[in-house]
Amino acid sequence: MDAQAMSDHWGSGDVFALILDAMAAAGIAPDTMTVARMAPVDHFHARGFPATVELADALPILPGHHLVDIGCGLGGPARYLAERFGCQVSGIDITGPFVEAANKLTAFLGMAGQVDVQLGDGHHLPFDDAAFDGGYTQHVTMNVADRAQFYGEAFRVLKPGAFFALTEHCLGPAGDPHFPVPWSEDGSGSHLVTPADTVAYLAAAGFADIAVEDTGAKYAAGYRRALELAAQGTLPPFGSQILLGATALDKTLNSARNIEERRTHPVQIVCRKPG
Ligand SMILES: C[S@@+](CC[C@H](N)C(=O)[O-])C[C@H]1O[C@@H](n2cnc3c(N)ncnc32)[C@H](O)[C@@H]1O
Image 1 (tube, rainbow, N blue to C red):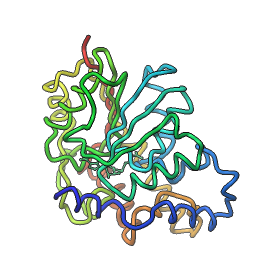
Image 2 (tube, helix red, strand yellow):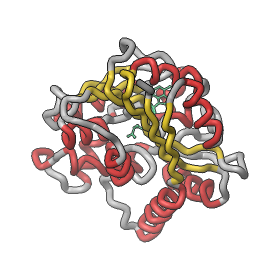
Image 3 (cartoon, rainbow, N blue to C red):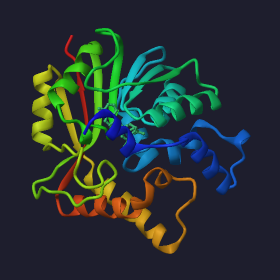
Image 4 (cartoon, rainbow, N blue to C red):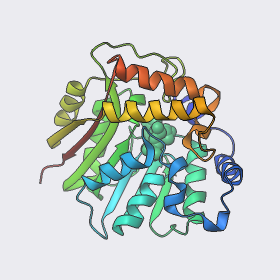
């Protein structure tokens, strides 16, 4: 899948306007919006905001650090980390409408001095060598065809000693996920690898101290809860389902089934560039 097709898969049109419409539908006045209140929409990954908080709790981020967010989406995690730790975050994402919305949301929330987002592909990062104190990529690598190149680029732009963290759906032992899922309608652009292969790619890129946590049970419970709310008609209107298109419910159901049937194996990984 080329970059334009990947962008078209994830987002189209005016995503910022879509979010403003959802705020209005939920009765949220724009002048009461904060980084925390935006979280149900702009942490666009399995389990949303709680998963970002758990990842952040595991990272040695200090005030003044400069981090890179590869595949940053709408920039919710970047703004949360910048606000919580007093750090700076530079994001890149392959989806043009998300990049535009991310920068509008950052300005809207008054964080333009701390967070910047640009269009780009994680296979070829537009940053200098050893530029960042830490980096992360949340639920992006399911779409990454060349893991060696992608992790190699992350390694290159990190300073010696910097952390690198990722969350993703790996390939489970039963294989062949049900589609559609959030990262693919029909299997095109889906490039899952097993947890063991992920660790091997990270080690080959040069990363050390690779710690892997199985997040499958937590993610499956999160998907099942969303499905229950949808069945009851009580899913909050201000939620990331607004970004998943017409097949949002199928994608959520399949995400749960894939974990339960061991077709996918979600992980959180934290590692380090030696030095
Ligand atoms: C599930 S969303 C996650 C967004 C964000 N990381 C978050 O957690 O809120 C997946 C994101 O990966 C981006 N993406 C996919 N392949 C990419 C690539 N090769 N380079 C950069 N971004 C990519 C998509 O555009 C999309 O925004």
